Image (tube, rainbow, N blue to C red; front, side, top):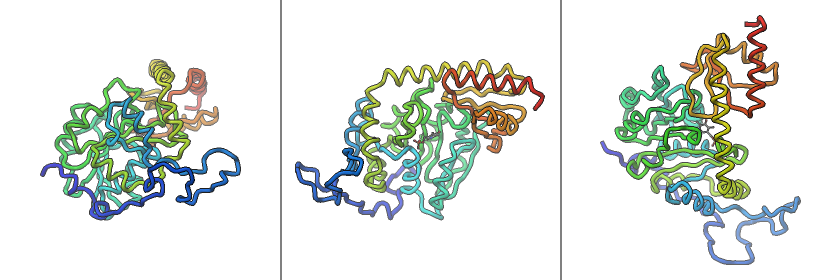
Length: 354
Ligand SMILES: *Cc1c(COP(=O)(O)O)cnc(C)c1O
């Protein structure tokens, strides 16, 4: 069976008549707006936020389209990419019937979003080298598998998946394949954006939370066919992106130079840690990373985690995650933070705790 979008979308979503907001019903010129029950007197703190934001995020999409080279109609803007993950599941997966497929160890939100929507999760682990097992993944799909989520560079392992394996899955699966590129700006591997036109079942997620340094704004992106983007827009809350978030994201896009410098500095920090961590005896492995963090296998992950906390340094304990036993995930910090981490680790090595 070939890919057929209309066949994949839930019937209730196909027939849904979306909420029509005051701002989207009236798009003309006017000077007195008495249509949206907004507060004509403004807010008590006197800023200029009493009006609802643009539900279509037109300015932001226009700028993104110029910069990324994806048509405006192929861009969905979400309240973080987490919103796009949730909406994709809601558009395609019938609660209690359909399922998604994920490849652990990977980002935790895919299964949380599935569970929230009463959608089952099928798990096909990555290979020992944390690469996508295209054959096993494709072989495990059934007629109720609607979405395959892959993450490249992958969280929490840090590596990029092999392009060939991802493309095999995209080409051979009749459902939706989501490639989560939250960390793509740190990677040497190219984005899958260039594959969009040839693959109507492909959805790419990116975010302003990582390399753009705007996690506090909550702005994430999905790139897909215009038809898929239309469905996402149909189910999203009308005003899902606040005005400050829209305005500041547009503004951030003008600071490409700072963005690039910041990425280069992060990569330098990652190389510093990757080069220096292996000299500790308790470090068993530093996995290759294309992201802004390192997965590090140590002799006692739980113990080291606690020791670092005593030094006021918090890392992520991934000890209980399949294939990540004994591992901590360490985000690259500023050079001072990285040095403080190294000092704490030296202290740990010379003490007799472990
Ligand atoms: C951090 C991260 C995100 C970002 O989510 P936002 O909701 O955009 O902040 C998405 N996917 C992965 C794999 C991540 O690690």
